[in-house]
Image 1 (cartoon, rainbow, N blue to C red):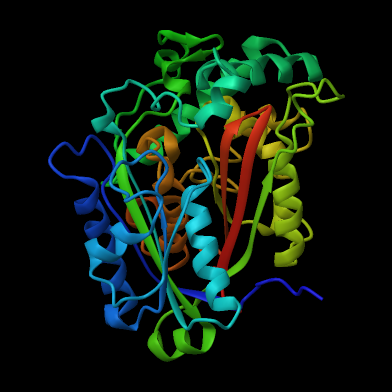
Image 2: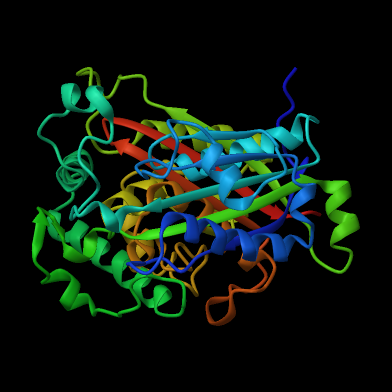
Length: 400
């Protein structure tokens, strides 16, 4: 019988580049930058790494679909390297591979790396056609802003809310993330727009304005994981950070099948969260989760995710948002590093970047944005569209 991975795997090192328009470097350089911080943090020799998982979604540095680039770039010791991709959950997918590799007993020490170099594509948003032939067959004319703008309309209709109410909540979400991102030297955007500036910004896809949309950037992040016993031996004077749960859920097409779904929430997120809470032994996430990094590709996505994760009651997230529940000094700070909103979204790096922030916070290393005594951190990725998506939920925390 499956027993899950709770407290079977520890994170001993993480690294993250500065995200942004990194015209001065290539994807290879970003990988090295993240890995150097990660290996130094872990305090091990690279030769001790026994297997690696490499995530990239749109990047052109891969040889076919292989893991060979990572092995060549980092001069890994002839170990197995697996290349993975799961849309916007790609970074978390690499982390899942490394974690499962250790949890299974197959390896003692594993590496996960995610990288994306999107600014070099010469395209304003995400590169076109990323989903392959299926992408154009299913959604030939839809854009990411357009697809998620409809989430706001569906949410309003479902719960009898006015669009002005939702827009005020979305503006606060964006404002909160910018306040946090301004404290983070690795964030792409460190400006602090006012609520009025956010509300009056140019419209992208109604009701999503400029500040409701995350940007496009370059970046990489990495993690090294091992057994709890090895972590204790290596980190004798430090807190041990363990993986409590890691779950992924993919749409089965129900949302787009003209069923009872009303475009007001995202089914895979709810499913992945339920599985993750069960694996982690969390009964009341609103009381037990200390902080979160969620997939704020758009501010409406973050709003709906609060409910999909079971933190807020359905249709009631607006009140929590406006009450400051998710602000840096609130009950459950969300996006303490600035989120996708301020880091941008280099696809395969984002999931590991989120885990990096939770890891720093748990170790008390988040500087000016440090949360007081966090115990449990949650990260959430969402790939695709509300009607055809992939959701991942990871939970990490201190070893009790």
